[in-house]
Image (cartoon, rainbow, N blue to C red; front, side):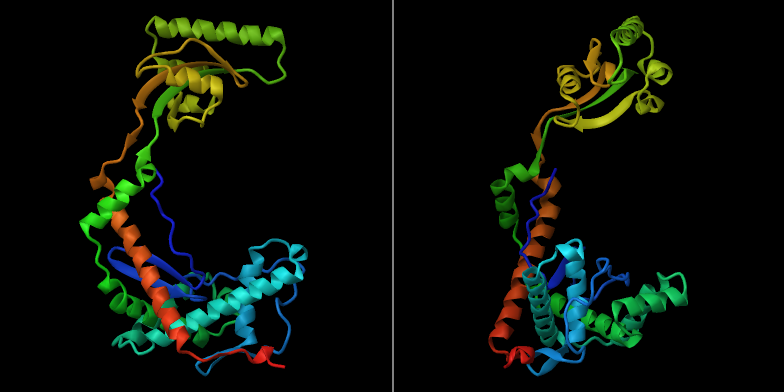
Length: 346
């Protein structure tokens, strides 16, 4: 089942519900300090002095070095460097710049949060991140590749914690989700809570190579027929599968687990779904050879009851509303902010 999960799009913040708490990380704060890969042969994503100011947000200057650091991972996701056009590179840089603007605006909303044990939390997270590096050398190398100092990382962690506190105090705590809203979402998206028909089966396969001749196929079919007779005479299906089947599932007595329509080749699927639980098929030919199929369970298509998914729907709607409210606050501040682009001045 795929729960309806389309969230409000944002490249600025990452939101995730953990229990009743919303955790938010403003780019580029991360729980990992893994070096960002740069496509082979790629130079720096932008040109210019790393200390040049590319944007000012209410007087806070963002240097080109910070823009470059945020542009590289976006470029890396686009594929080989030589496949990225000048226009695409410019679009990526503009996206990274927009991310930095929103991230700074978000921090400016959050910077007055009072967190009594903030320094302790910063050091705890810093120590946790550092502990994931096997050695001091690899830790320093990771910092260098990220283009950040230990104090710079501490500052990012601090910003993230302050933003978390702001989101919890000013956004999440004010969200109310009613049972009526949850039921309405459930009723309006029935396809999101449907479980398609599925079954569980075991099989015995007498495999035949694709290029096998007529005689080899005939021998394999004859062997499958003989095994089927043993099954019909009461022999244990799982034991026969273990001893005779050429499929890797033989080790599990032929058990293939649960599967739905579209997961098996057509001749196998058609024969399997025609069986009732406990039934055994005749010999079925596929491109893999000859199968004897035993249905061990069947589940009709159904809709998951509301009570079973109620908590997940609430988590989903709470995340959506939190994102919408947070982005609204950022955009409201943007409307009264002074945002300058010194590098675009003549």
